[in-house]
Length: 373
Image (cartoon, rainbow, N blue to C red; front, side, top):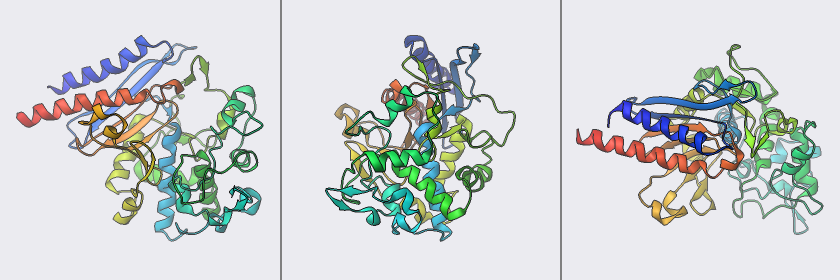
């Protein structure tokens, strides 16, 4: 298979999604092989349907929970610099006004037993402020829609989990995905450095990697002042781009980036370029099971596809992260390639896996034909 044929197949893949589903207004995909022989990116649809602005390969997008990889990376760099301890209780770094009583489980307060590593691996037991529904309802995610002009703060997300929700288990007992964990890591990062979170990202990650088109929503600007406006993203037919409640997304999901910058980040992350010690990356890959086929390290997902569905037994593992906007950023070690993309539609939070499976098939065929030749 020629490279030009592969590129055509990849472009057809995202073109078909936008043409066949009215809920998907735009899509972008980038694929890069470790040997450098394939470095392709493509876009389709309208980044701004109202102004008829086309989606392009350099259009920034809301990467949502992929942000957690950046937050975890910043925390682990600070760990390498001896600025924090993974086994230290979070109460060592956070004020009691923020976390007092955040983990009261079956009548016992475990707040002082929640460690930094528990936040990184979603093993804290602290409830997910975004999805979990309090007894007096509604969930935080529904509150955002009901009050679209309200700007919620990260502090309010933590307060929502602390005051309205019940912890899921004793710290370290098991794992359960919770955005609250990474909001708290954002506050720990600021407490340790004395800097706003976005400045820490810039100093430790964006500037060293030359990521000029990445920034934290509503907190800072990209290094390149000529960056395009971000693509609109949706939940069904609701345009979420200007819903002020999204301001609450921060250390857990507030980064906007381009596919070029995202690939640059995961390549550096995967190679260990961001860390001074190889053991750091190994620590981040101490996997705990979230659910069948899905494991979590420190701010990093690992998908064992055959466990999810037995007919996927031929599919290799993926390491990276997904986001609620239908965004994804993964490395496939077996086939040695990277992929980044999004469909900017929350209803594709699960469906985006179909895209990744098709990309795997295309790259697998390319590798096989090249091996024969």
